[in-house]
Length: 392
Image (cartoon, rainbow, N blue to C red):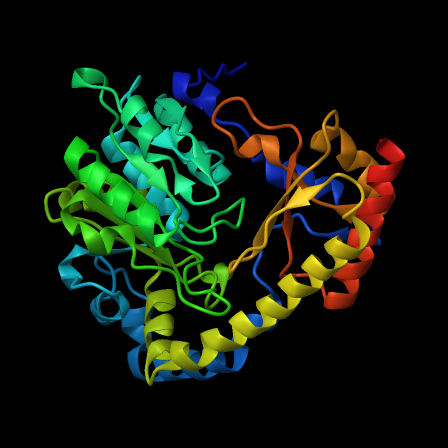
């Protein structure tokens, strides 16, 4: 019988807590507020059908052939042009989803035992990408305005133990939905530069603002000290698995080599398809329709929360964009323990403790407001209230 010997890093790989939870929500009749999926109503299917026909008719052979690891040049140019600071297209690397960008960064920047800093809480997918490299992930204290700069200085370390980078989501963060204020961005950018601490800025949700766009990205303030991750998943469609990173010239070649080793290149057809869709200012017309839909759904959830949970000792935030909001249960309650009771009442959510690098807050939970209808949202929040009462 063949015996397979696993690498030590494989023991650090664990299934996504969220994806395991989503299996529980497959019960018929469940209204799921758990997934981080964009609304399928936002997918521009007709635009993709037309673009696919164009690409296959005029570039079919090239679209189906192997291609450059850096990505399709017109798409890299388009990315460079729509970012709000001066970007050389040669700094743009097209990735197979922004999740691959996290994986490449982990391979290039993290050694066993390296100190890596993250927000409190942070994106679970980043923790999954970093953990196999066996770093010491350290959470930096955070509040409603973002990373607390005083604690950043305390956590950064020095010498061989200095943090390799701080990973941060400034806009409508997953899981909390919070956004970093302009003042905090200025403080963080200045502090990171003074500390010589690289920043990894992940921005999949920045275009999903409701009433006003978020402040300038951190990377725009110090391009040589940051790596920027972006995605087409939330503004076009996640099934394309198409993202990008923008890196300083000094680090770009190693990220490219890691990309070559991982998958040679992101699918050529998908890249050309998106480049075709982007022509003629499509995103400027399309993204406002996503914002309007998500704002209505977010408001529906906030209204339902005000109606059903205001007297139960539950607190929540009021996001200005994105896809999520963050709840905290009354003292003594545990969101993971509440979940089975909620499922019995036909509603599902994601317990928040999994999003913490250390000392997870068992009272927190994440709700997504973008895939359920306004009527379903109202029904789901009423069901959640019943589950909380039954568990109190």
